[in-house]
Image (cartoon, rainbow, N blue to C red; front, side, top):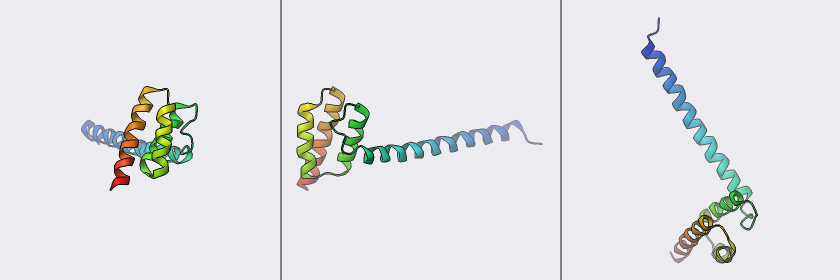
Length: 97
């Protein structure tokens, strides 16, 4: 007969596995969303614009820097503007090196 302690550890293990699997699925989903919305920088949906910024962050180029400068002039949402500024600075640093 199993003790209560053993079944408690089994439950905790299942919860831990569920958290890890959930995080992995979330990361894969976010990565796919970034790819799918890479051209959605000026889309009305804020989440799509955030995904596009994530894509540009991972793919620095001269064209990305130009696009981000235009985007900063256009973006009305302060949090997305701040995120775009950070992506632009990172892109410029990557291009300098």
